[in-house]
Length: 145
Image (tube, rainbow, N blue to C red; front, side, top):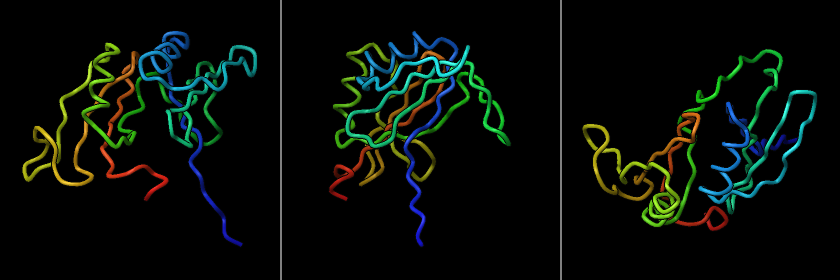
């Protein structure tokens, strides 16, 4: 029997849940699916990017899973969000007051300004805790690939 592995929730360690919730909901436009204290001192705010089947669990006070290490706030780096129009995504982030990099691509000598070929246009930003995100331009919506 085949086992299907689906990535559905990514934990994002934050220091201030209310500040993080405001950033992801108001500045990024992610839906807030859950805001609940699941155990004494353990609160989870689950948000989902528009069009995504994977959510983010903004966590505070949750002990690490057995056999794993604690992720301090700001330690999550390099997760990628995909969009079909990187310039529109950048403008939306700038309009919301998010500090965002220029569009760049991987060139022969590392990162270079502007777009590259298909799948080679990126920008970056961080949340208020310093968790670092990359945004990559995809040629089409996920449902069309």
